[in-house]
Length: 286
Image (cartoon, rainbow, N blue to C red; front, side, top):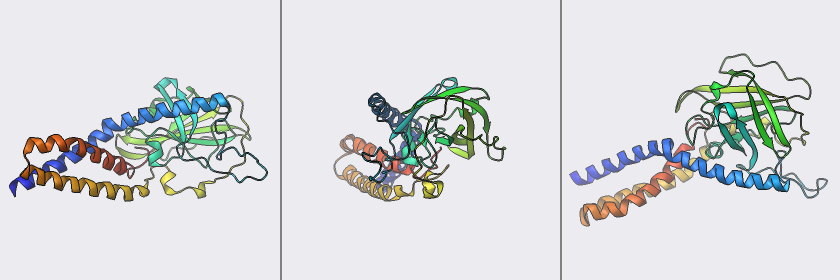
């Protein structure tokens, strides 16, 4: 009984340590790989002039075909902020799972460069923390957003936190971009930090909108959580528990070292799967 209890406690401790390791280190590797793939895809689409310019995919016959929304995670822009060394592919959507791969474009807003107020959200700490240094931006700083319509230059107005006054309303036909991330201590958010920036380059034409803010789920709002992760989390968690029981049995009947040599890779696989789903239940800007 002592050995069984000790083994289960060891596995539980390893799982908790593994989750912290996943959020702090392994998640950054996932982000880097996803960004590499997204950059290759978006660069190809820019070369072929097929990059998205709106909320919906291009239609073969605009007069008869119904608009089909872009898939979540579709690359839509490249964000370059030289002052804080950010160069990220922006993906469509702002759910927690999308923001694991990079900053996301809030789907109910126009794309950067178009008239109106666009919004891009990004994580502050986990999965590479691409927006972790937004607070270092100052009024007058310039940054660049490249879309399927070309390069768009923005000038920072200011950084604001919860309760700070909003900037003056846009003039007719103007463009603005909001960059949003978590505020506060890393992994302990205390609100949302936003950077407001106005478009200084020519405004690009925008297709008719398909989505509005009321069409989005709570998972796509700032600090939202992705509750769809519960089902895969439970399934992977059950697999992890079964493996823990098998390891406990094998250690008692097979031998300590033989068991751990076989078990460690398997537990790492199940642990990463569980951690990945559990991270989707955390606020999307962390």
